[in-house]
Length: 390
Image (tube, rainbow, N blue to C red; front, top):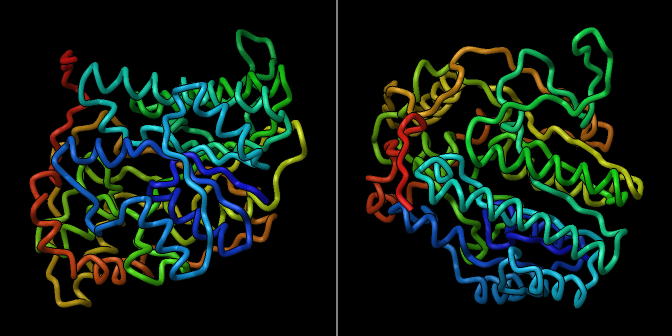
């Protein structure tokens, strides 16, 4: 398979590149390095240092013998993405090239507008480029379970559901109620791709993934191959943030009452699930929805897992509840279905309790580096505050 990964410099993009290369697939990476710039903008950096993309490509060749092609560019430029797809003729395009942070999208009007325009326009350009070059290309789009919010129904693995509205039964798109401008941009992506599937029969895998945590996969065998590791309040997932706080002897900062529940998975499990979906694509012209997670956990449960892992390492971590800067239900029902991946042979390799200790150990050698950005860990972005700065 020839796979083009949009967002190849990112947390998931780099790890998936290594996994596909290890399977003998050809990988073409694409990135404009927007995440590197945006993380610096909020006063942070990757907690574990990463090389430039030029040196990453060289390192993967030197360490594993894999050859990877790379294009630097922005997919909101139609001429760029059209030219890249036409030049390389991939079998599949993995779409990770979006602004991926909910807090970043909520900073002010400028960041909200950037998130919506960047994410929606990039996806539109991708679809039109594929239709112009080869309509049979499989699009794998990284969505999020956050598109649904916290509904009082089991989240299905289907884009459509039957509903009775004003006494009439109809088939409608599954209701979604996103919690940030970022999550709404993902809902718009889903709707736009559903539309292209209806009118042009595009082949799509739409992944509704939960938060991912961890520092390594089985291919990351050398420090030159590290993927990025974000830990601040804007870019870091709660698990990575808690583990950094434990490593720095800081309180684990739980937002609100801590009952917020989501579906989590490790970086290793994420790239393996993605690999299975790419090697087992849907039928041509099908739209496949996949819920991707391995365990449902609340913020309080995660805090206890990290606290216990830290204690085994001689760290006495405390949990501190802060006023929640987000607008979200802190006690709620949450039960996404998961059927597609098990049918493809996916089996969970790691639970959070198995990995939290190793995650803290991986962070400890970089404590002095991370301490330089300690001020970025505490929440500064408030969902309730309207800032019109542009």
